[in-house]
Amino acid sequence: MVRYALRGNQVWGDGVRLLRLALGGILLWTGLTKILYPYDFLAAVYGYELLGPQTGWWLAATLPWVEVGVGTSLILGVWQHGGALLATLLCLMFTAARASAAADGLKIPCGCAAGREPEFMSYWKVGESALLLLVAGAVFVGSLTITPREPAAQEPTP
Image (cartoon, rainbow, N blue to C red; front, side, top):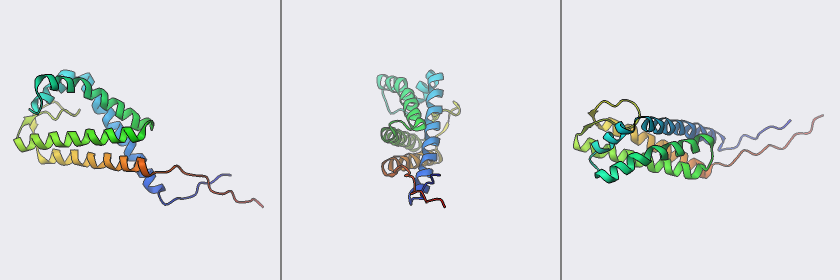
């Protein structure tokens, strides 16, 4: 019978694993929604008033696929370090865009996945993105610091 030793970072590792799966699910869901409704997402990108027509179109065409790839990477646990780094950068970009829209008082759809109705971008929405950024940062740090569990020494049986 093989038992696993309770290591100091086991709780941290399990927590990071849950956060990684949740973040991967969120990114996969939002990316697929953007792929299903590309024109709504393009309108949301233009609504932020941060990019020109060419750059906005390019971002709207590629960002959903990046989100799907990063989400899949996090869920499957493949290329975890790169996936976690890209998730952190994506969340940083989302937070900065929302902060800019909130500062300008824009009434735009979020461009996430939930709802396509224009609403005033508030600092509450910026806080939601910042929380997701913290989760992504924890997943990134956790992906660098977590070591796999090693089997404990087997005790002799009488």
